[in-house]
Length: 228
Image (cartoon, rainbow, N blue to C red; front, side, top):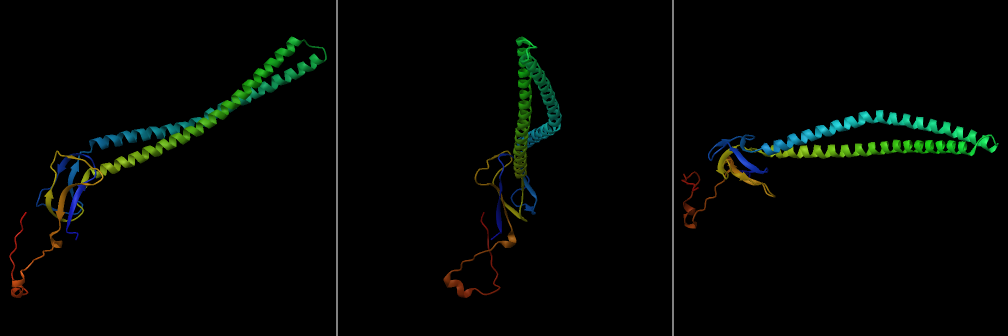
């Protein structure tokens, strides 16, 4: 138990390098094979670039919004002031009209000006609310995209780690199942590449014929052979 282990590959790609052959001694943590990682490295680069853009977009949005909001708030204040002024003009004109000191045309004009100013004031208020809603939505969207890209980058970095295959134990290489240039396809099961055994943990079971059991004594020399 634990005397032999099959080392596999969890990444899919071209087997770029096999550093050992049958009979070689290996140590725990030694690099024994490597799978072509260029495609994964390109994916990592793209993920990093996209993540950087997402972070820049977040910083830009957070930095600009207070300025844009302040400008819109000033526009709302200006629109409100204009509306209140024209409302006062209309109310004075209506008082004059009701007293017979103004014409209907003048009253209608001041009412139209007041209504237009009120509409503009309400429009600017809605614009301010829309800016806030849009900002909140953008922040949520950018943060979600950032988390997605961080997860993608982490996944690709894990996949990159799978392209370097190390021996988990000290031992001797007993089998190399793949050669350089072969394509490794990692599916639900890990693709077995190299087998390493620990000779000190190997056990031999010797079967002796019943007629010869009585001839066996402790310390008796034994000759054995291994067929591969």
